[in-house]
Amino acid sequence: MPRKWIFGLLIIGACIVGISVITMRQYSVYFYTPQEAKAQAMELSQKEIKVGGMVKPDSLHWNATALSLSFILTDLQATEIEVQYHGSPPDLLKENAGVVAQGRIMQTGLLFDAVKLMVKHSEEYKVPKDQHAINPELLKQSMFKE
Image 1 (spheres, helix red, strand yellow):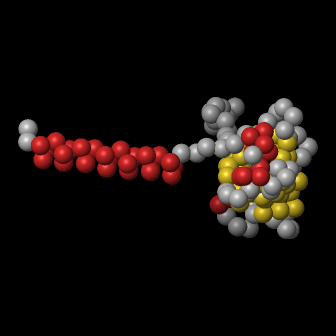
Image 2 (cartoon, rainbow, N blue to C red; image 1 turned 90 degrees about the vertical axis):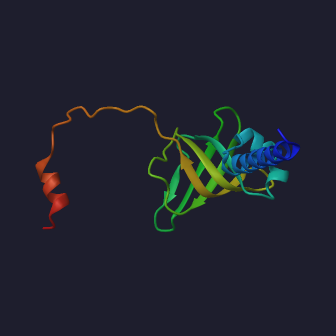
Image 3 (tube, helix red, strand yellow; image 1 turned 180 degrees about the vertical axis):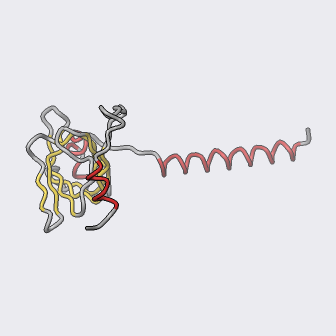
């Protein structure tokens, strides 16, 4: 095999590896735990990050008229961060549920201003109790305006 073929294959291989690394960095999802985010808040406050944890019970406050949401994100140990979000919350967001918030943490590490919320849903599929029961009145209401 001539040297130019080997050299060409090496260049093509290097390009493939380079593109793969760039793509993996762009699409890999890394998030900090509340403890990590709070500990590194001074450095992380300069960039947009993702913080993942659980929504603390009795901390979810939704103001529908102002479209503002706040809750406490916890790692179920001692670390808590207050999250503020403006916009419609995800449907699956609830207390004791896992959530990843994307946004900026304040330098104090006590407040996180989220621009996006990603909520984890259950992997379990539960079959409805009575699969064949249809409420005809609800079906009629959804199909026809009265």
